[in-house]
Structure formats: structure tokens, C-alpha cells
Length: 91
Image (cartoon, rainbow, N blue to C red; front, side, top):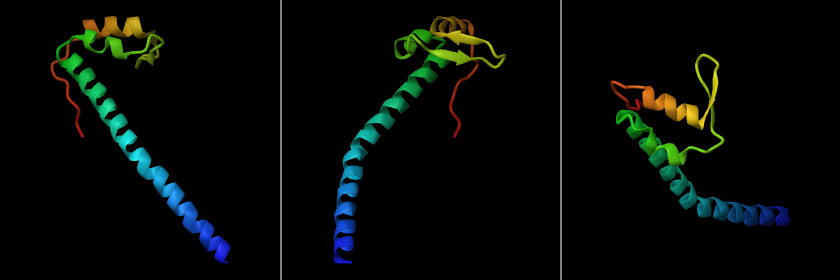
């Protein structure tokens, strides 16, 4: 019984230490994703896909609402031809 309790206590401290050490990385990742989302939104508001082009992977693939599959180049061309009257995120 004492060994089980000891193992549980040790495991708790080991796993809690891992969780605490990953929190700053998680915050950093969340901030990076939020910054990319804001850049994407700004590119739509300004109708300037060149803002997001460097952030989009060369192997980017998207499926449009009509089922057509497009790559990065087609997405950027489509974005340039799109005109938004407004662009915002609603939460």
C-alpha cells in the first residue's frame, strides 16, 4: 500500500511538472495562431492576399463549396478577385 501511494505521489509531481513546463509553449503557439488569423482577416479587409501568401504552404489544398479542389496559386488568384464589403470574426 505504501509503495502504491509513493508511486502515485511521484507520478503526480512528474506529470504536473510536465504540464507546467508546457504552458508557456501553448501560450506562444496560441498567440502565433491568433496573429496569423488577424493577418488573414486584414488581407480580406484590404483585399491584399499578398499579406498572407508567405504564410500559406506551397502544398496548400482547399475544397471550395462547389467541390472544386484548388491549390495555393488558385486560392490567391481567387482572393485577389474577391471583394469583401466587410470582414470580421464574430464570437
